[in-house]
Image 1 (cartoon, rainbow, N blue to C red):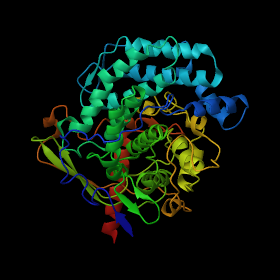
Image 2: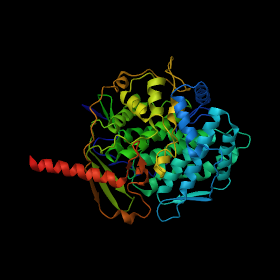
Image 3: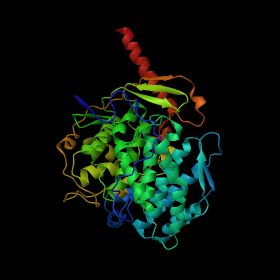
Image 4: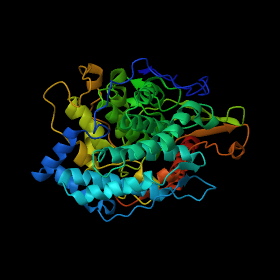
Length: 494
């Protein structure tokens, strides 16, 4: 038996507002000041990494070896800043230089904290200063919002690691974030690029939520942080938690909406929600545990599904299109097929929070985190932008000893609920999922929408699995058609 909560089961986005009202700011935003460093890594986290690697402790040393071998983590990296960054069709796309430089800054800064080698700190500062002294705008198609969200939160995290370095231009970097990245992300969460609120899938919202939260913390903007947290809880778009995870089951699993789309985007969304929760946790706000550990149940669901296990899926219809423009809908009836060998560096952070910080049982998270270790970062998961959507290196950064008290990290630590503990389970025998039946219905061609993206960029699907197999968009579509053809053949034979 299931409990339909949040977005109404079977009708995602139908009858929801169009997302043109301003984001609400809670009366009491997060505390009077913010802890620094305090995005994905606190001072205690950084000290733990350094001490464990120095002591030769596993799996930290394996995680650090992955970092040290990455070409982006080398102190000789030279930045390639641009005044305008473009992402999306019809523009001179140059955003690859941006995300590669961000990952180099982050990796060098992390390497500096672990080893104390100043050349890596200098490299990170050189990269970040070059961009804050050059970049003035992010442009392109609808994908400009993905660029603002993904690279805004990553930029803030890289800079947070060197914010106290004597040569780092802190004020100038804060100005760049507040002028160039945060306004785009804030605007997307309010207006959704002129689209109906459910037009953009879960990961679009989550990327921009991460940017608003991360830049708000980095720039000590209480109102901005408050807006991000409020949107996570009650936002109208598909990235808010009850829309991203619309159905909770009594067995402790909760359906992830984008599992009906494809594996790559579902993993991206889980990684982004984990990133959002971790940054909030480090500032004293427990979103990991929000709504009876709803994210735990959704992450367990995706982990089981990604491992090849059978999961339930409630059919839903998503409205698409522009306000006062073309319109349509898409109905998804079952979870998409998966490649159990697809590896993303998203699991160590989530698994360690629930099982080590909170002491909860999460068997699927534990299994998939172990299978994914040691986690790498940008440059380890394929050459396209999808391989750079997470900062990664979770084995090094988030492995931790089991907490002996009620919680760490400065966040509230409510008692674990019995229903959260039920999210363990032995799991089913791994097997590929059946195909996904998607029924589009539109009154006009999507091409009529101008820069409106109906489904988002497919670049994220160019992800390399552990075996070296690349899960391309065409391959997933082939799997879907093949699964549908097999079902139709069986039906005709019966």
